[in-house]
Amino acid sequence: MKRKGLLLVAFSALLVLLTGCNSLTVLNPKGPVAKTQSDVIIFSILTMALILLVVYILYIYMLTKYRASKAAPDYEPPHDEGSKWLEFTWTAIPVVIVVILSVITVRSTYAVEKVPAGYENQKPLVIYAASSNWKWHFSYPEEGIETVNYVNFPTNRPVEFRLYSYGPISSFWIPQLAGQKYAMSDMVTKLHIVAEHEGSYMGKNSNFSGKGFAHMEFEALAMKPSEYDKWVKEVKESATALTEQEFDSLLKAEHVGRKTYTSTHLAFKPAPEGENAGHQHGGSEGTKNGSDMENMDHSDMEGMDHSKMEGMDHSANNEQGSGGN
Image (cartoon, rainbow, N blue to C red; front, side):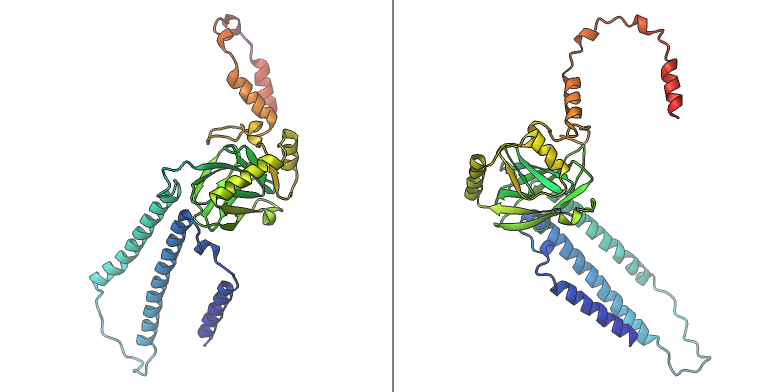
């Protein structure tokens, strides 16, 4: 009776949890990337449910067949040798299940890491999404505009988000359009999405990054291409330009509302372009120093006489190194 009671309580709690949500957004995809991930989740759940069903059936069967009986205390059941075929079967079945899940996982992972099938020939809309404590900055280099804490894009066109961070690691996530992907400093990660339905979708940071983490949400609005073009035109006509001083103040502020600008911070604080980008998008001083080093003319060093340097005494450097210890 206790076991049945616990199962009933657990089942009731699960029902309350599921019915308490207006919509399980992960299982309500609005784009091909999210659809691929939703299919994998559903397939995995059904597979696990089938395994649980078989286990519970066998469990009940064993409890019923080998329950205590009224046989004599000294009764011994006849000896029964094990079956090699049964042993092979219950060893092979888990292996097959793991192989199937592995193949599906690998194939779906490769599928969501590139432009969705059917949209390969379209030029993607590139949007740089940078996180800071605790907000999101969206830069549109193609349009020359920037938004804070909201992002708009056209439907039925591939969008390539280029993610990085001006603070701790964040996780960019629009559940109905794609799975989460990390935004980190000094490197760019890419996330491909396509919104096949118009609508407003919730976006958020799914990685705990400090006290303001719970408020780090944004609106992702999928619009008709004509409405998107109209919105871009209105922004260029009405918004103000983003200055470096304004951007620095945005980075220092913990929470800000929705903001719109007619220029992007990429002009004075470019985003890193790869995993080995160094501190290219850090402080402005580091950016300037980095660019000066890259543009330095080394031709004057070719004729330099290095003979005077051969006998240089490095003892001072050694003393500094030992002193640091």
